Image (cartoon, rainbow, N blue to C red; front, side):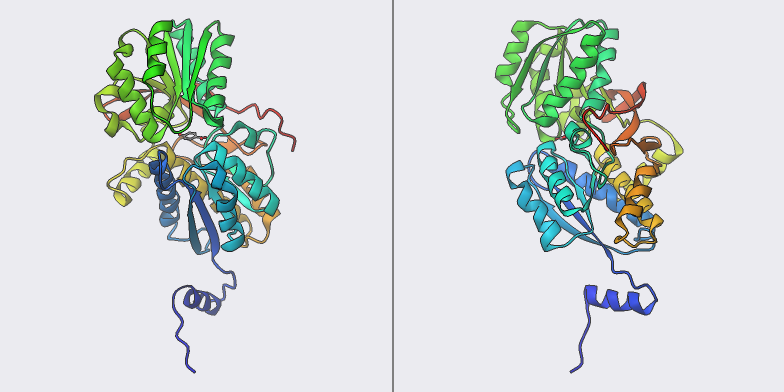
Length: 385
Ligand code: PHB
């Protein structure tokens, strides 16, 4: 009987015919495609695919096959979701995720199955701390990094007391700890730490408490849909006139169109900014806008783009043969990534050593005000490699 080959089967036969015996590299995206972080997950995937497209649709000559799981930023579903990609789809590479709690479960599943994991956002300090591992890489940040950079900025602006407000989960807690460490080291004082459960957005009682505490500044960690609402509620409360609102840059990245007037003038610290005006960043932004006209390039797109660059560096070293895991991972650890944010290398724990920018919101841009801390490395407390 004559067989008709379609899709993947046909591609495999054609690949064999051309003398390339390697199957496509299976890449599993575990990202939030729904919920408060949905736009972040989409931007990461867009960025990843943009880099692959710029390389002619392949990495190191290899075709890629994509698999997707919507993790919903739900840690309780994370072990099952990770195993869908690892066991059912048998992916070679995991790319995920946004939420730190989900990422910790994903990191464990990656470690148990010896799958290479590239984290394109989630900052959980523990992943490049006590849980660090040679198969785990991050192209984003540790939660400590961008927030640590805001402490000295706040002191320089003359703020002596601060109240912190965040979601009560790893990313929020670690971001606040990073800010508190550097702010108090320079003589500032965090007088109260307020939280609400993730991903709740009932901010009013917390803002009332801030008003009664009368600090010089508020420092927050919020992102995605929740950040849009927080900035709007803060402006509506009138607090902005007497209490400066400071944050890591997630609060205003990918959110400015929705935040509008409420975000104008806000200062944040992050490893990416608008207006860098380097040839590398300008080229990235032009290509991103061409491929995704409805979206503005943001930090999440950059982190996804760099995840593909890091994978490309690993695949290149093994001529596309993902079965050579150790050689691929050594090349990834040693890579210098030519990121739109500026070039970076990875620490021994696998986390970017990178400049953190001070940015200020103007219109729909987080305009760079210069580098707040140069080549900031996460302390990787507890990592033994
Ligand atoms: C995190 O959970 O680690 C996280 C989520 C969203 C961000 C940054 C960090 O924008």
